[in-house]
Amino acid sequence: MNAAEQATNLELTSKIATVVNLFKSEFPDVRADLKPWTNDPDTRELVDPDSIDIGFHFPGVSRSLQSRSILIQIRFYQDPLNGDRTCIGVEAAGFNHCGKQWRLSTVENWSFVGAVQPSPEAGEKLKSFCRQLMQVFNQPTA
Image 1 (tube, rainbow, N blue to C red):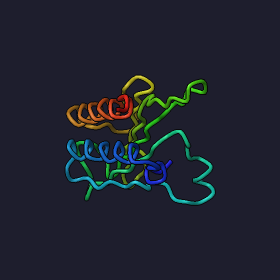
Image 2 (cartoon, rainbow, N blue to C red):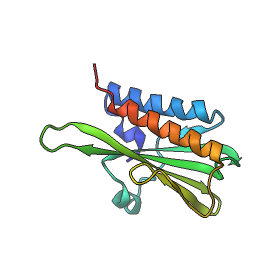
Image 3 (cartoon, rainbow, N blue to C red):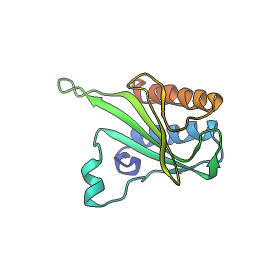
Image 4 (cartoon, rainbow, N blue to C red):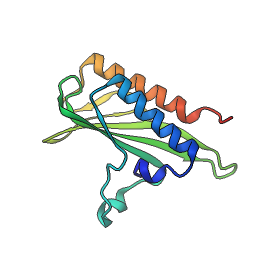
């Protein structure tokens, strides 16, 4: 679900802003998109209400990431017994004018899969970002 729609309280809004800043600290020339999904019936059918989705767009093509845009989907699980919401992982995908080029899932084996892959250095930066992102959402609140 679009990050802009998930930002329903100050705590969640602050965590989303922190995630955007973490990504920008690794890839400074990127522009964040808190509404990467269009609001049409077909897209709405595919949207996961237990996720926060953020798009990141480069001014051109990022050679190190082999992408023009990156879609980050932060996945959550809500415990039905106690209501606790936990970040269980991150799905990331890199896109260019030809469509999806690669994907990374921290829910699976933290490996890049696709026609092309980011450079080893950029891949490690993205994995580091994912680890930090999960820490942000799984920190106990004060």
